[in-house]
Length: 232
Length: 43
Image: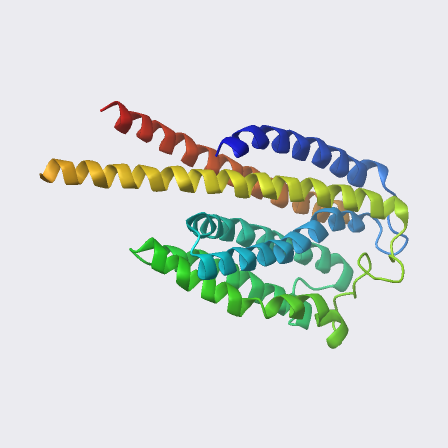
């Protein structure tokens, strides 16, 4: 708690600064794409949301392992608080993808492998958030949520490699291609800046939500102790 | 504003609005928990 007290204002300040620079760079100073025109600017918010949806889920998997193997209560609280934020970024990935798809593909949605697997990822996040809150016994909810998160981990490589394994309308990876990124630096650098800014913002939100969850847990424990004292 | 710019604007508003809404929600949760804890601890 003390470490996060010290860390959070710095992280929040860094997130605002990097995000401000990245978004201004992407919106005003990066060139339009020769094929997509101005619509390419949606990439500066869409791609970081996609990376966070998958990266955040891997974080949830790590927390779930910690919860199941070491029964770490902090991992339980962090996982419970991470899932609504993960659901938000995955929803934002789908919404911005749809807003990008309409002018470029002529449709808001297609049931191709990439879009469908990201939708499944969204349902996994929502399912985890619902399941961990569905039990009166928080520990049991955390166990069930951890099992669901581990089963759902199968979907992460499917999301990543869906564009290689199947013929999709969604384009293949262009930034994380090992040989050479398929983006010009004028577009790549603002994208990486935005990705860093959103990652910092995501981390601040996850930390703050975990702190709020811990405070609420302490409050409930004190309220129950007070109620027990009143009964006696 | 062209049709393409509308889509760009809506994307940024959706993402930044979503982040702002969650931040406000977490802050209000934290404030409420701190207030209730302080009340309990002073009893």
